Image (tube, rainbow, N blue to C red; front, top):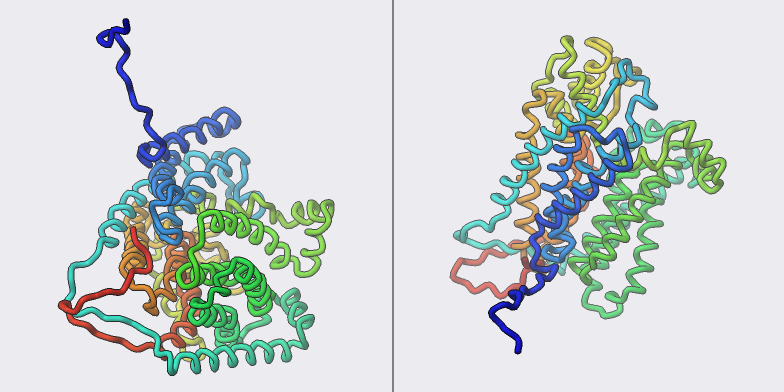
Length: 510
């Protein structure tokens, strides 16, 4: 007879859903670090400890997103997923491959050992991520009941006319641009020979013409969502291909990689919020496409048609990559990360006695970009002056002739202005931007015109982390100003009292 008193106690096996996300993040990041420690002797250094801490902090949000506990376009989940690469994988990849900016740029003093500076930068980032988490969660909480509630709705009498007129104007301007450059071939030739200088003075025109693909997708999302045919994946796939081709024609051929990528991101977000939800599988496939696109597009951006031709041939591609150093590793670490640049800035700030902190000059120079050069010809210099003088000494900066054009990221630009110890405080800005966007995501009502700009706001969270203030301002003006003007012209505001029942559904729910 079985004696229950001596039987082993029964323990119910915990399901994966019951395991806390921080536990999964700890195991996932620790196993990754362990693999690097085993496979790479260079990674056997104390720098992996603060890098691991950064990975765990952002990894919790990435795991929550992957487990379906956030909306697919939740900025916290997406930023956590991107942060796993930005703060965690990128440093490990660069150290294990010994891949740094000194390998392809003529900098005067390469670091004998990058790892201590990567580690110290990771400590600053970890402190900043803790501040980011606190501010983001505080700001993203729903506000208290307000005295009045505003609903922003499209005026369906005037908006279609405004949208159609804006799209027609954008199309005409784009055709006119091609005509002035002698057709598409002449347009591409000008890009190859003159790069960005080919479009000097065309900024306002390009601002309107390059908005054409986005305006068309807005119209499709708003007025096609009630049609069952518009919700078909076949129709959406065809729309996606057509949108990509049109985006390449309007801005991609000009060498604007970021414009193309973030316009695609905005379009996918519009489909997600207005037509039908996008699954995580589609988003993950899109991220893979994004990385391949960034790598492949680099051949066109830096080599034109010759670069594209070399990409199609394996031997020519290897030779071109060797000459230009435009490798996949550079795309993953330099284009999609800031570890090397920020570590190098930190090294110079600690070891330089000649550099004077900008004390906000780069931010003032960035804000001055909103004023046309015709109005303010002698606008103050931006971060290019500060970066050049940090690396090459005071007085070395010569505008348009000798200057460093790196993007330093949130932490890097902060160090140029106020030094390393200000880095954690800069993440407060990132937390506020992300928290505001998240609060809007889960509180705005379906059909509210602000939903049209949710993908754009999510992209602002990314670029706030990875770009500098001047890049953020230019991006906002180029990508959002014209579309926002069109939507605002066709918007009407309805104010309701707190006592009036609100039966509108939310666009997303936690």
